[in-house]
Image (tube, helix red, strand yellow):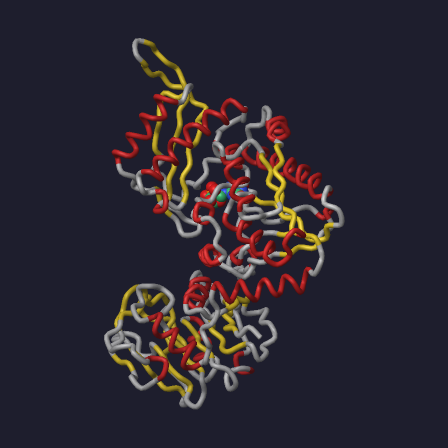
Length: 509
Ligand code: XMP
């Protein structure tokens, strides 16, 4: 049985970060909303309660019946989690006179408490709270303090229940990782055996048991997630995995052939489908970004469905869905508004009537890459920048024509090749060229030109939710601009996008 830690989410922006830290210690954990706690069986070694934007003093503060577990399982309350336990266990939580935000130092640490093993007095911690634990019940023992927060950490004596007011998961808490390790290894007795290799071994065994001799169809995109999902499935069921790779005419230059070749080298049973014209026909005259996305989505489903029907007796649809897409988030301020109708959520329509198998739906993106590496997948595939499903169609502002696609492909190839040869490709989270349907005057030789503009975008990001523009070296930008203007017919001007997200988005459409 896979041992695990449960992380109960009370809506903090840091909850996923706690999970990442736990997993970095090779310990499997799952995030669940505070009000949908799964059955706590023998596989659960401990529970972590996250922070929250709520105050325990609010009427609608999130509740969790911690009393059910606190004598049987180790529990660590972080920030709100710590205040919650203190408040509902005989103590008192009040609004602090000043909001505690930022760095602080632990000027008292109870050295012989197992939670603080190897955490020195003076250790820097990161605080982010408006409330403070003003009074604790008699069976609480203070095990760390800062000069302004007396109850920075406590233990309920005689139990394995701990609370900490600071955030061990952020890197500003210099001994946060040590503290989490103390809790997880020394207090919860987790064995730290959850590694890419162990994940691969268990997943393949589970896939074999689940799928037997059934056939699976899976759409490959050339991206990391679908590639890793395909290789795992391939190792489990071999030729019963039927992969489909669609050329929508909106991929990067030469990408269709090179990706198809590398998949074939991996031994995957893959069918490439040239559907360029169907996509161009559907896009003709469409300039609205959302209409373009919908048209591309619709044609993709038609093409994919036709191809899937050619596989006799298929009963499963494989997908490369990853953990952040399935974590049920605690809605604090109501569902967020739809900004763009994207991100592959929603999947394929019901009429396909297939059961869904998602071998990566417990992994974060960096874990998918590590599993991919352990599976021996080509580093070129694993290290690729994210690329949107609608491809170059949302990097050509306005309507899309095959001619514009070709111009953009050429400019984009020059850009990306230079990022690679300049040694910066791997430092950039995502880069691409954008075709602007704006004409401007230029001069080439003795001739006046009146041509289009290419914009270059390169961003740094962790997850695409926020991003900042990259400070690419001027020399490199100059080289790229020269090469594009000299080689791509129809372009006489290159600009660089210096907008961060928010307020700009990464893609222009
Ligand atoms: P934005 O433009 O919203 O993009 O800042 C964030 C990330 O999402 C990608 N993106 C898409 N991916 N279908 C996709 O599969 C889409 O329609 C889509 N739109 C944006 C974008 O490339 C970036 O990585």
